[in-house]
Image (cartoon, rainbow, N blue to C red; front, side):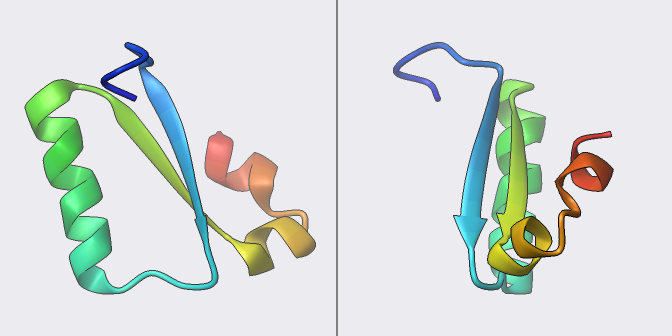
Length: 53
């Protein structure tokens, strides 16, 4: 994201630990850039719109 100067990015994983979510929040506080953490389950259950809202 930093290299391409994007304001929003997406991570897709099977699951996230609390440490990963803390790092995402820390990155936002430092840079003002947003990372949307999606799980495979979110995508398969079509919960993407809920997370993007």
